[in-house]
Image (cartoon, rainbow, N blue to C red):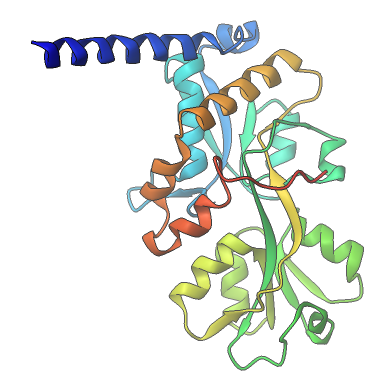
Length: 275
């Protein structure tokens, strides 16, 4: 009898706690409420953040984040759009999506155009080379004939600012960049550490230089002058962290042997505040 009573009380407390947490979210802006659905730009070529699975469905940690925010905001009504590193901000500013959850590292240049949520992860960039490459450290990139990267990325901005004389090839997707690199059209590939870690794990003919650069935090992107919407998103991110939702999403979408790497990049793990 006592066990049943305790179980019942715990269940009631859990329900009450969930309701209290839900009340922490501020009022949903009328524009989103009237629209009735949440339109989100996500990556479709960046596992485990955002990608298309074998059935062609949206998948990944950031996709789970988008669905969770939609569950709280619109009862689960969501429209997701594939965006690239190059077109994601134009899609947002043109009003095609309401927010970006799309591996969007924070840079001063981007912050002049859009607003960022509080950060929800952090990471850096690295270089991928063939196993027998003479490039052993970041400074050796000056020896490269061509560095392959994506358009509109933090890597592209870093090379423009720090190594403007190094020849680069800028493509639209990770698959295009990797193909160009493996075909020898570039002798170095620059990308997010997380992306290159997955590639190097699957291909023993390549290696990472393992000297991270362009460290940045990632956040959700929204248009300028939408303070109510930004406040709602920040509250939703805070709730995700408090409810420890990132861990099961990582375990669902990331390779098991890389769980530690990704868990160190998301709450509750601490990460640097980088402007």
